[in-house]
Every structure is written in C-alpha cells, then in structure tokens.
Image (cartoon, rainbow, N blue to C red; front, side):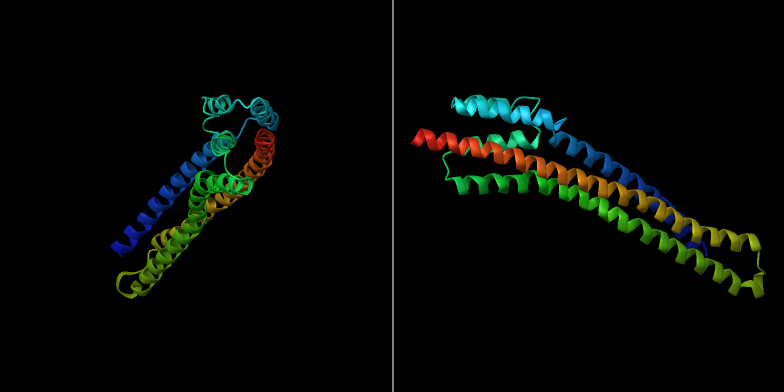
Length: 216
C-alpha cells in the first residue's frame, strides 16, 4: 500500500513536470518561428525587392551584407538568399536544389524536431493519467480485499478513486491544449514554408536572369 500511495504522488509530480515541459517547448517553438518570419508579408516583399535591386546592379557583396545584418540574419528568407547569392555560379537546377536542401536541413528540420516534442507531450500526458487511474483503482480494490481484517474506511476508498479520476482528468487537461497548440504551430510553420518558398523563388528567378544576362 505505501508503494501505491507513493506511485500516486509520483504520477501527480510527473504530470506537473509534463505540463511545464510542454509549456516551455511551446513558448520556445513560437519564438523560434517568430525569429524565422518577417513581421508581415509586406516587409518580406520589400526585403526581396531590395535584394533584387542590388542583383540588377550586380552588387552581390551588398546583398550578402544586407542578409547578414542584425535585423535579418536570423530569418529564413535572408539566410537562403545569402546561400543562393554565394552559390550563384552553379547551374540553375543545382542552385535551386542547394538552396532547397539548406532550407530543409537548417530551418524546417529544426522546427520539425521541436514540434515533435509537442506531439510527445500530447501522447505522454494521457498515458500518465491512465497509469494514475490504474494505480488508484488497484489501491481501492486492495483496501476492499483487506476489509475483512482491517475494516473499510469509505474516505480512504474515496481518496483512491479521486486519484484515479483526477490523474485522468489532469492528463486530458494537459493533452487537449497541447493538441490545439500543436496544430496552430503546424499552421504557422506551413505558412512560413509557403512564404519562404514563394519569395525565394522570386529571388532565384531574378538572380538566374541576371547571371544569364551577364554571361551572354
């Protein structure tokens, strides 16, 4: 019985830690996505237009310097524009693949890794709640089984049943908001990916056209 009582307490502690970890990961991922995005689509378009204007003048050093400046160095689009500019000597198809691979490895892979922890929390919390339910019910039935020798205190049974129900409710209370948060974050990541691909494609078209004109 002491072991079951300790297990019930440990499950409550584990649920609390799970909630804190889930909140921490969610906040961290929200900040990470915000770092990779521009404040608005207009700001992103203006940045790409500025880079294309420099490309038309073949001032590639200025493009690199602009992308590496403090307001932009942590954002996805400037990082990839800088990569494209530095590899502009590659054939168009190879250039697009190089930039796409960098986007996958250095931006999307990091976000997907962090968001996978949100999914882990969503799966873990209900399982901990179910474990608490099992422990609470085992403890309650053990007290009932021992009632012939020790007598049954209804308050003790009620406490065990409360543990069983509270842990299940706590697990669901953690998992449900995390499911919503995870879906919202996935939408943000998808919008980031779509926006980056659209603006990067526009920049690559301008860069390749400039390089083709220079070669001609």
